[in-house]
Image (cartoon, rainbow, N blue to C red):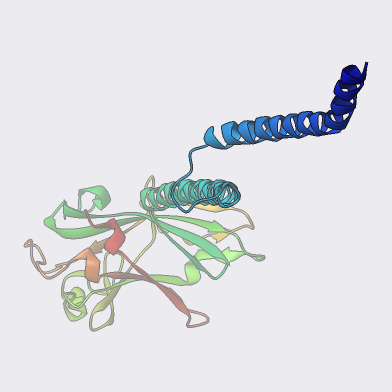
Length: 261
């Protein structure tokens, strides 16, 4: 019986050591599996040298933010360019409408449009039954006028003149005498003419009511009264239509360059 007791006694002394070894082995196994999982998780993301996951996340956030800002700036620039193109188209349309309608001016409550200014080689349009048709160099100016002021407009008090350095006003009396219908002396390079009605060829001297307009009226100037030749020095670019108020002494000048063909 003594040998058995000795064996049991030895087992009892070794049992704590065995249990401790088992515990240590289990703990080592647990740590090893956790480290393996972390290693596997770490190995699933390949980072550049010197780059950590935290720095990669920060860089990614910055990149997304910059890209969003760049996209927003590009959208704003495109919108601004589209708006400028639309404004340019509107401006171009407006200028075309203005040029096609003639040259506008405002004077003494009158809205004035010079519709056309054309050179003619004959006085056919104004030749009446008692006046012969003659060749020459003539300027025909068509007007539209509207009373947009707050009082009556008496057209008889206005003198319709043209100025050009190629005009020799001194010679008009030699051909026309005191009749200044197609050109009368005003000053060295300025002549006046009568505002005429297309239908009747009579002078337009009536009063315009508020809001009333007059159309189909024109001026007819003889540019070279003593000759049938062209006045070669006369060009529309250097010509001003001058509407002069004989009561107040005020005037408006309209350059005819925009009507040159």
